Amino acid sequence: MNNSSVGDSMNQAKCSASGVSTAFTVALSVVSFLAITGNLLVITTFIKTPNLKISSNYYIVNMAVSDLICVSLNWPLYATEGMLKACGSLFADPTLATLFCKLGIYSRAVSYVVSILSLVLILVDRFVAIVFPLRTLNLTARTRKMFLFLSWFLPLLSVVPFFVHSEVIKIEQNTFCRNTMSDLALKIYHFLSFILFYCTPLILTLVLYPLIMKH
Image (tube, rainbow, N blue to C red; front, side):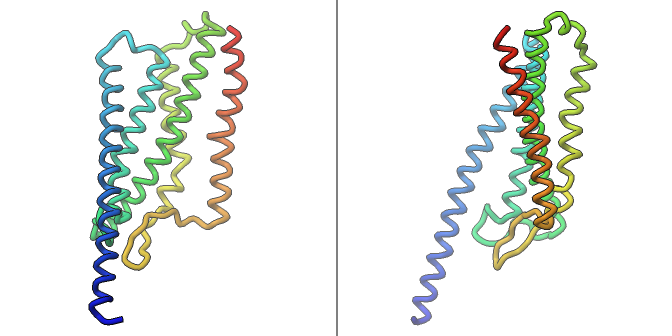
């Protein structure tokens, strides 16, 4: 194979990588724009409409806020991984790249858990309102604020390992943001998270939902 053939193959590979990167960037831009717009509309509508300020809607807005933060911080994560151009990372400073890597993965994990806990709080709120309507009057704004606080405090605390152990690694000419925990530690962490934030809410849903439907 002569030099011209090698050069043509390399150019084709670069063009292909550039095309994939461009398509990914366009798709990511559209999805991010729709996500940001939709969540902002939810938050704005809730703030400006007094009739919507009921207990369960606070938890819906809580999810919208977490989604908005996640979408905003995921852009730097993808940029750090070099997804927005054919080769390498957009951040020349390794410290800055590592920071955005940590924030991107951390915010994504926090958003997932906040959304799950918000759905659980909506379920519990509806359960109390339907099954024990008189007790609903005793649920003060302070109680709701405490629930909202816990729906953020627990995720922010529980997913700290994602922030601590996320690092930028380089493979050939590409950079990636990955969790660097050992395989055993990662499996244990994922197992405990699965039990706490997925199985427990699922069991609670299976218990409460039939009771709600009976009333």
